[in-house]
Image 1: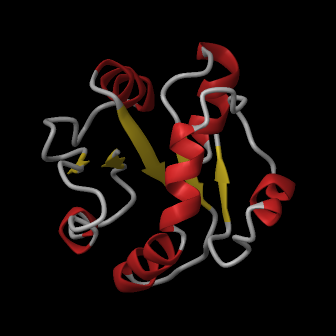
Image 2 (image 1 turned 180 degrees about the horizontal axis):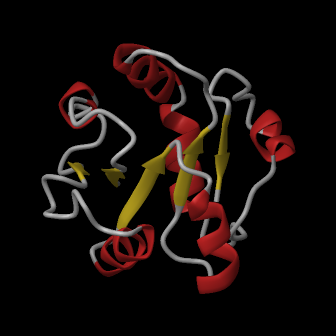
Image 3 (image 1 turned 90 degrees about the horizontal axis):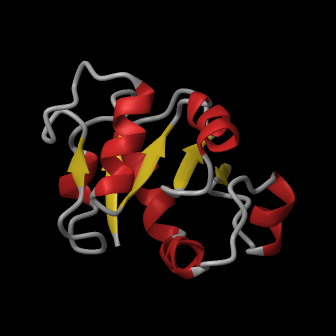
Amino acid sequence: MRLLFDQNLSHRLKDLLNDLFPDSLHVRDAGLGSSTDLEIWEYAKAHCFTIVSKDSDFRQLSFTHGHAPKVIWLRRGNCTTTQIASTVRKSYEAVLAFNDDRKAPSWHSTEYIDNLALPQLQASFI
């Protein structure tokens, strides 16, 4: 599983999580540093990435552009990069399960996360 970290997240996340998610990229490393959300969406779709973002706009794209790619929407307030990495790391198994679930709808509510026992992630799987 490869993650594509959005502009609103630190580029350091790819290194901090490389042992769990090798070959992940930050958008700036993919040449998408000033790209629109739709361009990032299309890149992730074409290259089999799961987008990780604090941006709710990807939720809207899931409604207008369909199912792929998968998106992890981090719904946390101000926090450090280390805190975000720790949260994703703690949720590793659930993130893999979400990625492998071919029947997962485009948008998952908070209830879905609670069912996965991930209230600490404070994220939505799209």
